[in-house]
Image (tube, rainbow, N blue to C red; front, side, top):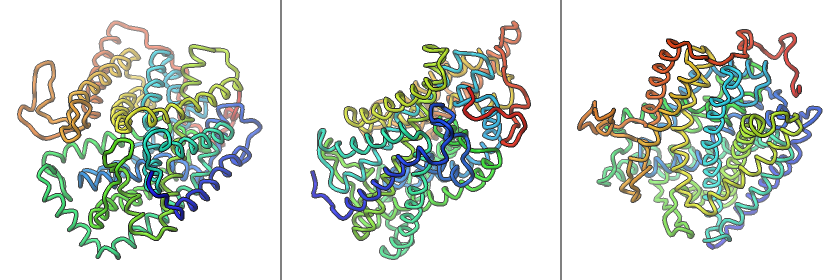
Length: 547
């Protein structure tokens, strides 16, 4: 273990204590008549207003791993790391109208998860289960990545040991998180998100003003980055993209934008809001986080100019590039401000981890437990099952870190992004039309999932010594359609998720045409046209926490 940084640790501990108190107090904040209902425990009573929703969704989507990984990607790979900017910018216009419809039909029918909507829209247990399991599998490594971000801060503060001792502070933090999330449900991360976002905004705004002044200005910073990448023979990009990566950059941004609100935790934040006007304001205001993200990303180039070097992970003996930003703060700022910065990143791990575990627990409870194991479960039994499931999910994520190379969690998250994109036809498109046949959607999901995973499996990463799952960028020359190669010799790359989604839609369309031709039963739609337009003040709206 390295020498402990006591000033940073004291500030970190004090702010962690503050959010712990808030987490336990949240059970009485805007409380309904009971927490023994998924509407209350898992969706915060479905009554969050504009400000709370803004902080909640922002705290949910802009995670601790975002704050360490995006600058680290720019530090190591250059311009490709900026893909996070356009994808968050285009995401909100794309999802503006679909999310309003998802909120309305869920509020009208009492749906808690996207899989609930699929079950009601198509009357298919199979399709709803596929959507639910996809969401759970895609979310688990996402939670583990929050631990990766939190551990990068703990290592920088001196907790950089191998074995169980090195993971002990992380385990303690997640035990506390598990307890107050179990008690307070979604209200805990919603309340803590205020503290997290204020800290993040303060830290980043100070950093982008202070660091350039100390390093000689942005011109010096960009010059240092350009010099680094131009002197690296293996670098494909520098401060600008290469010609071969521009398509991959664009498709990665588009695919990530399409997938963003398909993740269960993003949908949970949406369904917890009070009404359609709240979502309209949020979809207009949330791009402010993209400005923050762009400034944050530039810290990767600032670290190059500052000569920052990644800490060596004592457990693996390899440099941990996720420590670049924490190490930059530790090197360049006074200890007291570095402590605040570390707290911002650490709390930035707790908020999304809590929301993700609740979202996964809701999926398990509604779409697996109640659907197959206990169909007559009461709302109170559902709530208890969700609480227990949230504990399992959290400690499953901790197990990833304790027993598996954290790099494997990153690989799984890469796979998770491609996987969750395959639920787009069954969830997002179904909000507008039932043209796709239920068996077309099942076949499309299977085709997109299978082909996407096969393509990811075949992508190597020689720099990391990996033969499989080495990235999501597929050279067009390797695109093979039953022996036909449409782009032989092309080195231009494309995002695997988009290729798999195109296959999904094509297969779904073909099977739909065939199924309609033979009049195959297409399930029963239990929703009504009016369900997609209800709002909070509508007469006879289903009460919150109704049985």
